[in-house]
Image (cartoon, rainbow, N blue to C red; front, side, top):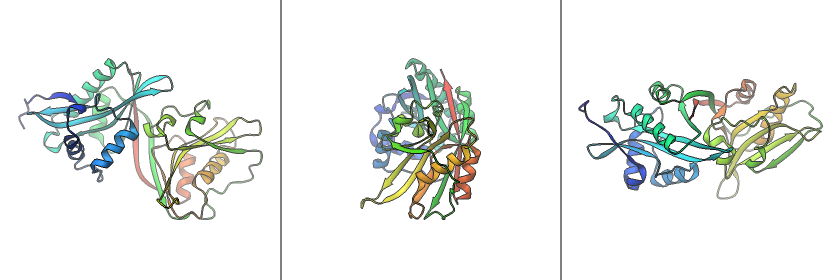
Length: 298
């Protein structure tokens, strides 16, 4: 490719569905694992994650789409927030600074949209993307971990001591929003506003105060059986001497019953509670990935 070639930028809404699908799949060619999607999967991901075609950017060369950034924008916790739901460049146009140029265009766009804070997640080994994001104004805010375990849990998994006086309260994700230690800086899919089909668990102490909480989702088969359980957040009140027991109670409740034969995973779970991660690994969960949570305040 001619290094002097100039790129132009349009919005994803100006592309056809077929162009968007091809660009997305070609933009992730050679990724660390296969992330190819079908048209149905692409459209569903846009709907679930709130991707805005009229705001998402597409880079063009010679009149053809060659790179993209998918963007979601919505109000979160009183702030106008944005999420980079995917950045990609097709193989022939990599190595020419297009990712950095896209990030500069994104920053300009977010400023014009009066966005307060932007989020993204990137695999820790993806150093090239990390560099482009940092040049675009993002900084690392957390380490995210994906863990998985298939099949029934062992009887000893998450075994807790005597924890009398606590009450387990299940509800919609929104019920955690006023907990003082709710993790606001979290991966996009892990924030309660983006969990339309999720659930919450609040462990309340004898005085009614929330001692711990979890956000999770159960997925069901066509026959109505649980086929997978996904944990998004799990936090205990800072300063409590019984945090370890509270984590065990929460994990036991979320991933139970233990004899259930299903897939159990964590999705972009914060790594800021290493004792929680250790409990999951002790229960046979294996690490699938680590990502950086990156944030930019505008």
